[in-house]
Length: 424
Ligand code: GDP
Ligand code: IMO
Ligand code: MG
Image 1: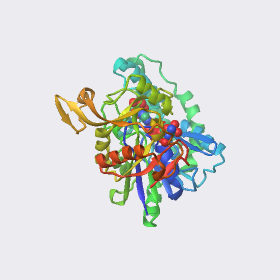
Image 2: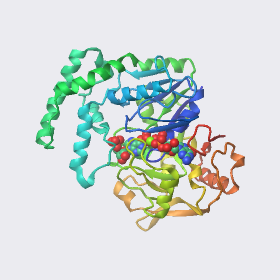
Image 3: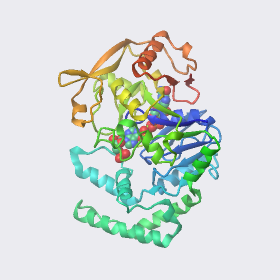
Image 4: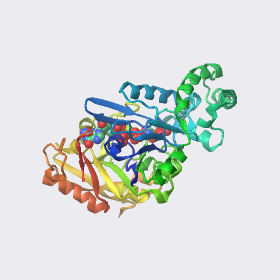
């Protein structure tokens, strides 16, 4: 029995969706535990490409049951669109998709607040996805959130939403100088979506506890990445949830002692969408080339992703935060035509070399990366499915990362398709 957390080791978009889809054939359950439709997880198999935002990436490779855990914030309108998209691919979601009755809803007012707050921040904007994530988690921790549980009683639900909206309208009008929202219009958009979502609601904590009792395998699918974690990331340029390992427990109800594996997903280079420090960022032709080769445009917002070299200081920090005991390396093929490849092994900060990722975000902006340079392998690794078939120079590059981090690569991804994968 494996209970494996799959966590982004960087700033998101590491290829978590691809790896979860590949590994899900052996899992009884695949569980999202935090975040919301800010996530965009891309799956490619046969001739199909699908981007999932809320539904776990375990729907297409085998018959795992998929759980949207209590830690996720769910926009019912986005979820209904996604349910339709998945059903259009021939998947019957009845008895495959379960939504925690304790998960909180993202309501239209959260999205409006997300956007007006970003606008007000001006040049200090975080660069959010605009999906209402921050404001929804604010409602949750300030105990005015609406949970899936609350959908049972429509009258009471309407009353709670209208009460919240009254306060939010005051803020929209007086603080943000923005138009107020009409409660009736909002309810008429919301109620049909809520009806679609209701049949999927369950006590998913109990379902998972039974799965643990029965020794079934579980994959916990992180969204975002360790460096976007609200506690451990580059605050305030972070998301509003805990993608790191602790979040997998609180966001699902699975206890820490039940976790058997913690797998970090890292690209062979780095990307970041939105604002905030990025030590190895390349604002030059090399960065452009990474973006072009890697097709680095956001799966949720379409924004160009910022690109840079692999940062082992940051990777080691993510490994220690999450207790990662295995890694997946993705997008190796993107480096195939580079003459030389850099990997950051140290930071220079205040005139000294360090391998410690600073907790002060201003200091993260100040560090200068120190690189080790590798010769490029200059041949295609695309679609290679056995480690021994990789060019010698590629294997040396991979072994260097393993030695630096002390953690083995269990998976190496050599293309976006499910089949383009080395499992060791
Ligand atoms: P996620 O948010 O971590 O699931 O990652 P995204 O789906 O946002 O971004 C990863 C992108 O890289 C997607 O377009 C994937 O199809 C693609 N991808 C994943 N693994 C590989 C790989 O090994 N090689 C290449 N070239 N593309 C990959
Ligand atoms: P996946 O799961 C990359 C970033 C946003 C922004 C910050 C806060 O696909 O890896 P938010 O909307 O969460 O309040 O935005 O976090 N961000 C992501 N970046 N991948 C993601 O998800 C992200 N989800 C949020 O760009 O910088
Ligand atoms: Mg993504």
